[in-house]
Every structure is written in C-alpha cells, then in structure tokens.
Image (cartoon, rainbow, N blue to C red; front, side, top):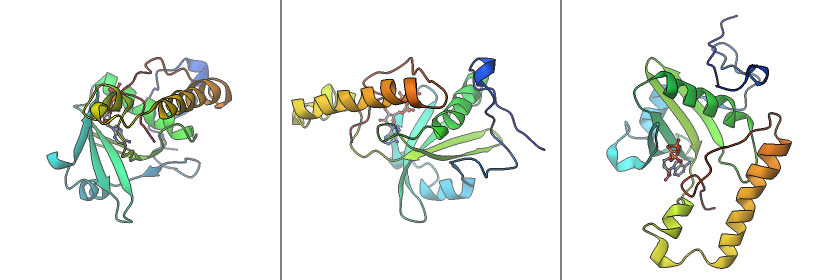
Length: 180
Ligand SMILES: Nc1ncnc2c1ncn2[C@@H]1O[C@H](COP(=O)(O)OP(=O)(O)OP(=O)(O)O)[C@@H](O)[C@H]1O
C-alpha cells in the first residue's frame, strides 16, 4: 500500500484520516489533474483572481463540463501550508452540509497544491457589511438574520455536534462567511 500521509494537526486519536495516493474509492472528492485546473483558470490568469487569503490566492474557473469553481492555489510550500492543505482536504472534504462550502477536490504534485471548491458568486459577508457592496444595501435585516442562522446551523449544529469528527472552526469571521 502506498500512502502519502499528511498530518492534519488534529490530536492523534482523531487522526486516522490520510490522503491516499493510491486509492480514492472511499473519498467524496475528486483528484483533478494539473492540466484540468490550468485550463479551467486560464493558467491562473490575474483576471481570474477573486481573492487572497493567508495561505494563497483564489481563482475563478470553469470546468470542461461548464461548472463554475473556485481554485485556491497555495503559496510556496512550507510545513504550515502543507498542514493547511491537509486539513482542508481531509477534514472539509468529508463534511457535507447546506450551509458549508462544498469542497470538490484537489491537486497535489511537486510544489503545487490546489484546492477546488464550489464557486460562491455572491461574495463574503464583509463585502456586504463594510466593502464594495455595503452601499447597495442588498443585505436587509431578513437576509442578515438568515445569514446568522445559516452560519450557526453549519457551525454549531452540524460541525460541533453532528459531523463524524466534532470540529471547532476557531477562526470564524465575516470574511469566512459567504452569502448564498
Ligand atoms: N468558493 C469561493 N467562491 C467565491 N469566492 C471565494 C471562494 N473561496 C474563497 N473566495 C474568495 O477568496 C477570498 C480568500 O479566501 P481564502 O479561503 O483563501 O481566505 P480566508 O477566507 O481569508 O481564509 P484564510 O484564513 O485561509 O486566509 C475570500 O475572502 C473570498 O472573497
């Protein structure tokens, strides 16, 4: 058996999850090829860049089947970036909830680490509260309440209590909440 084991930073007793280099049958995510993701993002063209996080840049793309995706391209590999990649793919790839961003798959090869998510076209909560869409007042009080309730359902109800691994996010903020 050829396992490529990436430590996810969780305590040992919650650590049986590994990214398998040889057998993807039991995994809910897809292993993309580099060619597919280069094609989807026009070789990570700057025009396709939709955001920047602590660990890398996020690009909009379209698969050959016409589905919109967001591709996070991790910065130069470091132990911290490798752990971020492993946590996202191993842990988030296994949680499925209507209020949590869907992780579609990944690519890992050489120094390149790419994570593929469902594309969320309506921007993050911070953009609506304080950013470029704040003055448009798109987020009325009903939508604000629904956003708060949806976030709580995804985090507290599902991740804390119902997911197989009980997960605490520890860094929830207005940039991490996307509007449906
Ligand atoms: N699936 C997505 N669909 C649309 N936009 C996205 C998506 N994922 C990320 N983005 C955009 O890219 C930005 C950066 O995302 P990223 O996850 O790298 O950083 P973050 O949310 O600040 O978290 P981190 O703590 O990892 O830096 C987000 O603020 C958002 O604007």
